[in-house]
Length: 185
Image (tube, rainbow, N blue to C red; front, side, top):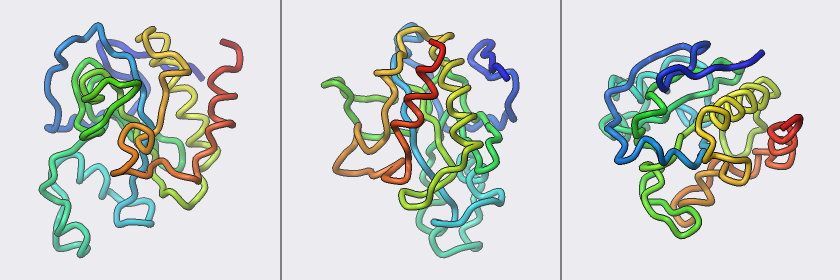
């Protein structure tokens, strides 16, 4: 399977446009891919809660943790669910609100120039083979469309905000992922 991007959107993905984005300062400067993780409620998989969160309609009465986060106003460009399904929330041409205070190679404000991909998961539970396959296909499509992003410009949230974040965590197999991304390049 091959993924394509047209006008900032994956052609073969579920599109759930989030209200939490704004214009990039420079659409020619898309030069970093950031891998994250998320699970809602924490440590639980499945259900509509991640999509609800990125859409700003998470019901705070469903779970005590939702009371804390339901008004946060955050998004990622894409989510890869446990079964490998890709959901896109924000056009790659726009700035998603995923990295927060961050720095890569000495450059601040990673949201300005990065694409954020969330994996449904936690730092301590292995990601699925389907997620690695989808992430590899997505990363290759992103690198083909936005050539400033190379395999060396793919990183984890934990590396751009090391004192604040720990995702995608120890459970993410960077060696495996980098091998898959670099195969046949």
